Length: 190
Image 1 (tube, rainbow, N blue to C red):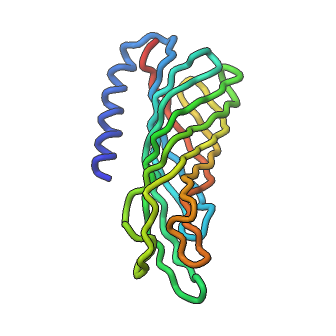
Image 2 (image 1 turned 90 degrees about the horizontal axis):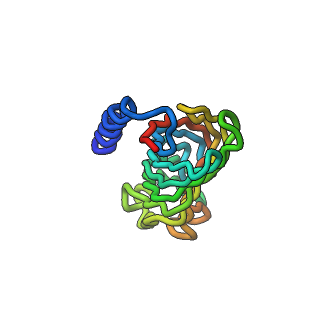
């Protein structure tokens, strides 16, 4: 986690220097943000994460880019077939392509990140169980929100599909949440 904080701080310092030297007509930007949400499954309670993305506005209303970050999922204690299960926390590191559609210069927008989510953390799904956690799967993060030149505020759903890997009894392994987030747009030039 210390490395992630250093990476975000370094990117912020670098971007701050670049931002002051650029014109106001930017088509390339770095998007740095935070997300949080409520889990959509039984083995986790919530998630909190940081996003970082590069976006190029192909047209004034359409952007393409790449995205990554870190989503931390907080394990939730559960009862499965009468047995108490203490599910472990884990993280998801996505590597994804992004697209955004901006119908107007300021206002409503929508888009998604699509790629692969690497699951990191404890090798086991829960304390005292031999079930291995999945290594990752297809990642999707659709979002809809409000934007202006500097900020995006959005509702989002993020999910890493793992199939039946990590299942304990009737408890499916879930790496998904629905929530809200925001990001700051750092101009990088034309």
